[in-house]
Length: 95
Image 1 (spheres, rainbow, N blue to C red):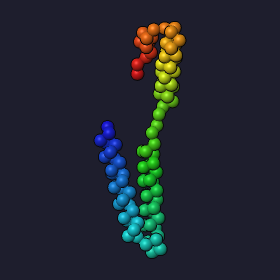
Image 2: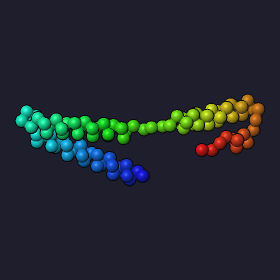
Image 3: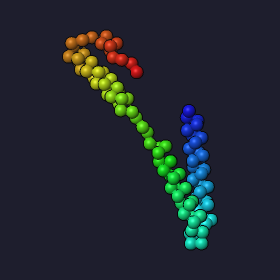
Image 4: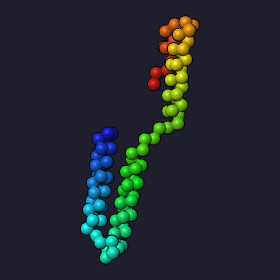
């Protein structure tokens, strides 16, 4: 999976470089249509790159992580107060 992501990222970078080199060879005044088309393509490529760099975390994953951390903190707080023994850690779900 990570290989595919790296491979796609390299392909995306290669396309960006290719489009930039095309833009360098074009004159914005003489080849206005081709220049604008390449600018549009470049804009879309950068949008794709930005979307790929964002990390998405599902809300239910955040809730589960928060609940587990809260449970661990609660158990350690009770253990400090000598209310329960360390066997209480067996009741915390392992993800």
